[in-house]
Amino acid sequence: MLYRRDESFRFTFGNPIEATFKILKVNQISGGSKEGRALLMDLSPNGLRISSPLDLPINEKNLLLEISFVLNKQIISIIAEPKWKKRTSAQSFSYRLVGLDDEETMKIIVSELKAFSKKNHYNDDHS
Image 1 (cartoon, one colour):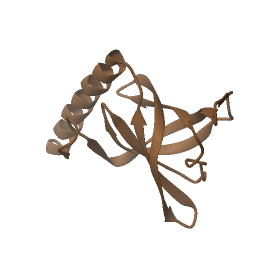
Image 2 (cartoon, rainbow, N blue to C red; image 1 turned 90 degrees about the vertical axis):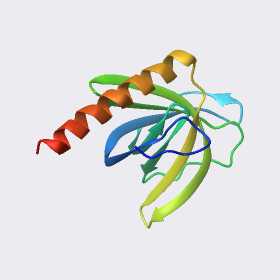
Image 3 (tube, rainbow, N blue to C red; image 1 turned 90 degrees about the horizontal axis):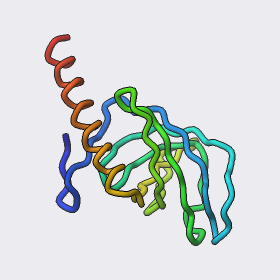
């Protein structure tokens, strides 16, 4: 696990996890968007980083996303807003998102990351 001073911990996945996302709100206008595909690169109780071929309008006011993925057979959905966007290749963008979720969602993330880390550490040691 990699640690950052400004949060409890951030787990970087060796193999990114498939995720989907929807735009929930942009410029004070609510409404669902089509589902987009992304890869979950890292995760903490406070936020995440995804990679996607879609160029999202993160400079718009009040952009709100819902990101969903499966970790240890547990479906996790996070409501988040973007902090930054970087072009990583001609066909891909990386996004840092800050979670706006409740304490219960944060506890689930911590619990599932601990289980995921244990399981993968065990598998690495016994390959």
